[in-house]
Image (cartoon, rainbow, N blue to C red; front, side, top):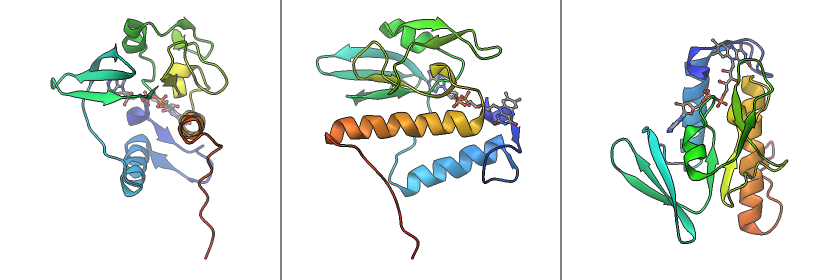
Length: 152
Ligand SMILES: Cc1cc2nc3c(=O)[nH]c(=O)nc-3n(C[C@H](O)[C@H](O)[C@H](O)COP(=O)(O)OP(=O)(O)OC[C@H]3O[C@@H](n4cnc5c(N)ncnc54)[C@H](O)[C@@H]3O)c2cc1C
């Protein structure tokens, strides 16, 4: 959805197009060491203590934890057995059932943003993604995680 948006209500950003917001975010993630792969995930299956993701380019990836952030689309999670409920936000039909931390009913599968039922505004969906990621990193580290840089 963000690709179609013109945004004047993202706190701290006077105005920005959806594509520019996405590109800025991807560049920030890359600067922090993220590898970005542009592909569609067609299936997720459970393999022992991890998950295997397969893509439309017939590549596969292993992951112990996955955050679903698939916007209005929930079929990928449903195929894996992730529970859904009716959406509460305007025009959002179905969402993943998550607890306060962002966990779904399938251990290791988390959900964030529109597909997790939060209000469909960029500052909220992006913030929800950050919240769930911090909860996931905290679980992996065994202690609450915080990422603060200090003004020099
Ligand atoms: C026309 C329009 C105008 C808007 N204007 C505003 C505004 O002014 N202010 C505001 O705050 N918000 C606005 N919004 C809403 C804002 O864009 C949403 O809050 C935001 O897009 C939701 O983000 P999201 O990450 O949950 O979903 P999305 O932005 O929809 O992102 C989901 C992503 O998951 C990907 N995906 C889904 N399934 C798969 C799969 N199987 N494999 C790989 N990738 C997959 C999709 O390709 C997509 O990139 C607007 C939305 C629209 C449509």
